Image (cartoon, rainbow, N blue to C red; front, side):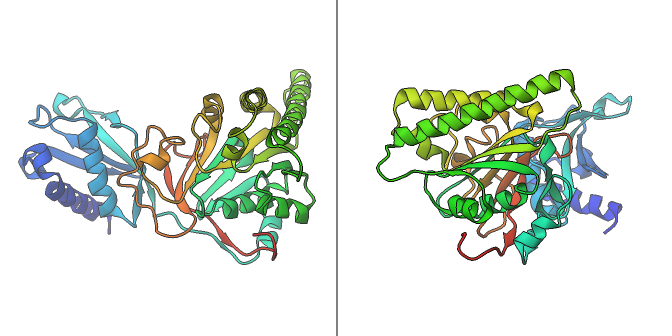
Length: 358
């Protein structure tokens, strides 16, 4: 299908789908037109018009076009109408609604041997899907959310296996489960509950390690002050089941925990210190708002609706985003200079690893 045929097909889909929302007006009555670009398409209303150009119209066009273009293109969901100015002197068509897209759809990576795959990776890149990778040099903090059984631990094991090549790790595992077994197999320190110790005592121990991490940040900042180009090895604090650490704990210890992770999240960017947090939800009871605002890799796995996405993606209405069915699927947003700001459908990698970890 060439660009002219695509333009005609999309225009026909919008003519049939918009209907009553624009009071029966169509491209045949010269009420609107579209233009295809390399990065998306532009809906060009001819004003004055009998319909209102607002968020409702934008989202309706998104729903029609995203379904019509699947699987050749994936439209990138916007939080509100995306207006652009057009290069023309005709006031009737000087503005348009832009709908950015990416070619194709999200495709899952299948890895026969995770250890071998990890060893063959170059630099600080973490492949997420075909044609989507994370440059860890640009990561501040990341969060993986999802209901029980959605595949969070499976996804975390993948990240840990790739991170071990270029980052020092300290792992906090309140459930004493998969991350602890992975740490044992790979020789990394892990903090987990122990028999005859209270929960508050466990979180207090975590606070001591977080305080040491904060000291490391301050030391690195002093070095950067004298030599801004100095390169540090990455250091990542991995915390599984955040909610388990914040509920049922002495208030003073909990406040200290929140204060420490807030400072780390706010100060760590330039010193290559990172937080990687996993939990069922990330509301204000599980992490401070200041930490959530510093996240620049956000992953939601499992059931996707307004309720489940309200904490990681508070401005997002997931309606219309085509999310494949299956385990380890959801949404991802990478906020850096290399990726579109928009949320994308996610298919976590499928892999095989050592027996006895998962």
